Image (tube, rainbow, N blue to C red; front, side, top):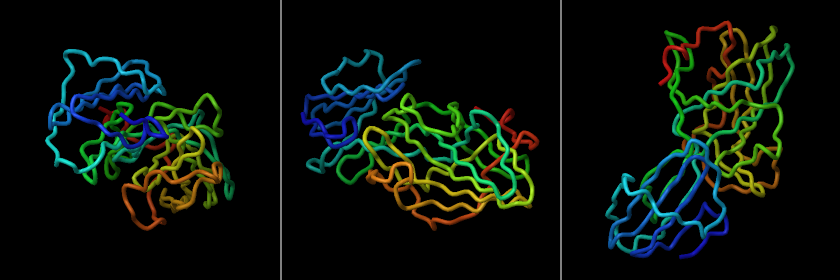
Length: 266
């Protein structure tokens, strides 16, 4: 069986009787061909690291639950592609901070990627590399369902934060209001972000968030180019949703607001 250049992401020739294993953070993923069927099984570790050794192929546990697929013969290779989660993500900064009127700040959010399994042009399934709990971003009257990310948003990216199963997503924050803004939670709409790669790091499209203040809404703009922090990064996956790159949405929440997170996480 072949090994893709960007292992573990890439295309695989999986023949009958062959199997392949990937470890991406907590996710342990097996695929095998049983006659004309594709079998997919996975489980999560408490503590996991990415596996960069294509020769590491441990046997799956006997009690592993398998998904079995009958696919069109000769319809193509098995492809592993990175994708962002299918809901927005909510994250807390490393420390809550204030942004003064007409001031700017930049933060970086590390978003766990999903594994998209394709067979030819058919998307077979998607599997999160990290199990995320769901949360409500907003108040009792208005809001949206999101995933909660336990890792914090940071003001800089360091080498120890690089993981092949996480994408770094820059957010350029600008306070366009006449008042200070206290930032305690950030909602990032990852379905609009493309995925880029520079060296061993994956990046999401940069989001510019201009806070208006009077209605707690922000004017958002998603760049089509690689992030300024990784100008030579190459595109590896387009956004889930190809909408207008500029839109308006609630993005920030302070400690003073009733978020509902304590009531609606599961």
